[in-house]
Image 1 (spheres, one colour):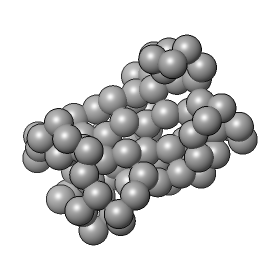
Image 2 (cartoon, rainbow, N blue to C red; image 1 turned 90 degrees about the vertical axis):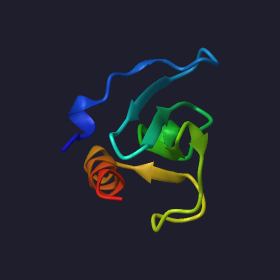
Image 3 (cartoon, rainbow, N blue to C red; image 1 turned 180 degrees about the horizontal axis):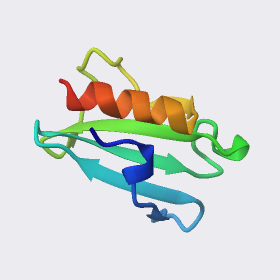
Length: 85
């Protein structure tokens, strides 16, 4: 199972903060960011969006929006759930 430690962060495209993207064998993937404009970013926390087949999706059991204010451990827990979908 992939975890937070497996994410590779690069500069966010807007120039502020960082972003990591990861795709899984089940067709799902994530974008994890920490920017001054993301939910929790100013506090050093992370925001995660879920993708399916390359498209942003809000139709999983994980909710109908991006997840914000996430710690590294919470990102790992969500990554595990996404990999199990």
